[in-house]
Length: 118
Length: 110
Image (cartoon, rainbow over all chains, first blue to last red; front, side, top):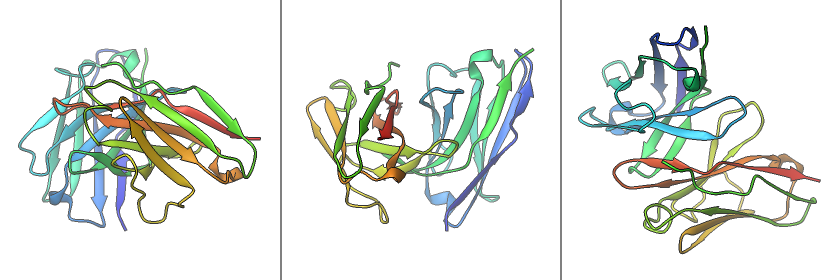
């Protein structure tokens, strides 16, 4: 069965950096685009970024453009999110999700919590 | 990147039907048949329940149905059950290779 397992969350000071990982299994990882979606405490879902199946293109929400970088290693079935210049408003649970046809988020991981605080 | 508009909360008694609306613009909901809905019980990850406006993934009960008219999509849950109590989110492809979510609707089963 499809499994997505995020890791790498934690507490970081404003201006700091963090790298999240999402380990995929149960499907051919290199065949699907992947997203990161976040959810601030007590708030709704916010789309963050998308990467094509082969890593050839990336797309970002305006709120993270220039600070976050999505990447993937298809040989290791792993998705990454490099987060730099972190701000308190980046505090959220970060989910990775499998894309279908640039359309919807078919499967989700359990999420990893990122807290930006001094 | 404004979110899609959903009512903050809806409620219904067991066995009743409820409908959750999701209003966007011609640049997202109205412009594409790429509206999806997600169910999120407290403390869990979101789960896909409707895709491409009205399609249900395998395993999702047919009590859940979706539709769209113009810039507004709707999720209807019929025959409400206690286990349906959760937050519900709509989402739409927006073009320019971006996606947008609604603000979420809390469903209470009375």
